[in-house]
Amino acid sequence: MTRRRPAAPVLAALAVLLAACTGPDAGNVATAPTSPSTTASSSSTAAPTTSPSPTASATADAVRFSVLGDIGSSDASAAVLRSIAGRHDDFSLAVGDLSYGRNGAEDRWCRFVTRWVGARYPFELVSGNHESDGENGDIDRFTRCLPNRLPGLVGTYGRQWYADRPAEHPLVRVVMISPALDFGDGTWSYDEGTARHSWLRAAVTGARAAGIPWVVVGMHKPCLSLGRYVCDPGADVVDLLLETGVDLVVTGHEHLYQRTRPLALGPGCPGISPGRFTAACVASDGAGTTFVTVGTGGHELRVVNASDSERRYFAASSGRNEEPSFGSLDVQVTADRLSARFVPVGGGTFTDRLVLTR
Image 1 (tube, rainbow, N blue to C red):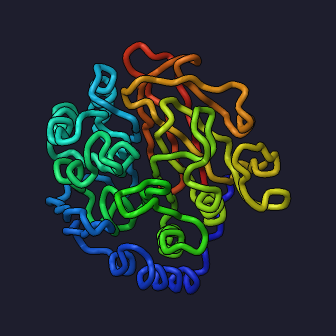
Image 2 (cartoon, one colour):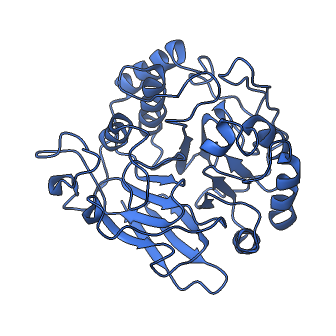
Image 3 (cartoon, rainbow, N blue to C red):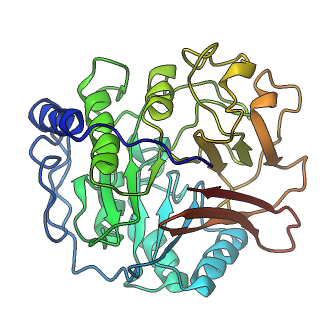
């Protein structure tokens, strides 16, 4: 893949300053703390979350992490967590819909997780709809029992944040956002013109201006999908991810696995139109943004819709009716290579692999 030209440093710096002054979590974006600290939530009723001393151990020349969503506490969930623990990687990204348990039982689920991955392992969270609305617990309680352990995190852990790994001379910036979720203060929008749209742009272009080779964005809900849901996050956030050249976007929400072909804006593709396939949006040279849904963390799987109008965007998929497999995404990053492979558990046979190079 041809390496993208980074955004101009001056414009990126202006974007960062603008987001810091106007966006949610203003003051957290412009200057990253040297270690995780207490950060107030954007919701007026949310309790602060305190981060202990970090334990992530990414080396200077490689970073390895896992991605999973829609987890629960089933035997399959335990198998996925054991598989992650066996890799001895640097951290995991849980992309929402965590316990599916009752409200008030967050600590019990956190103990279920740490039983398999260890009490000091960085199991990093962003909310799903089951935690944002209190249906199956509260994201603020989850972030207290599974606190941030990545140094230098910027933003509100569990809702909207980013962190660079390694903290010094980083190879990847991980950005976590929450479009189309309601934390009790209205549905979060990342549409163009909103403060959160500006925050996301600044987080991505700031990484490019800093010379960080790779940018990975995580959020709970996908836009393009072969499952049951429509594009709740909205096309504007997808177009922003393509415009700024994000390398990999990871999601959950759909209880299946799906990976798109690399997508990019350009002649014939001024933007993504959800519900419709536009051939010009598929990057002919592979130098685009790849979207991967990993809603296979242990909760019941759902079917893949083979006749979905967006089917031709996708290169791989697995669900209840297509090689059903629980599992996680194993991501490895160096300065010139990002690889990701789906690791099945419990007798699952589906596998998939993505390799991006500079």
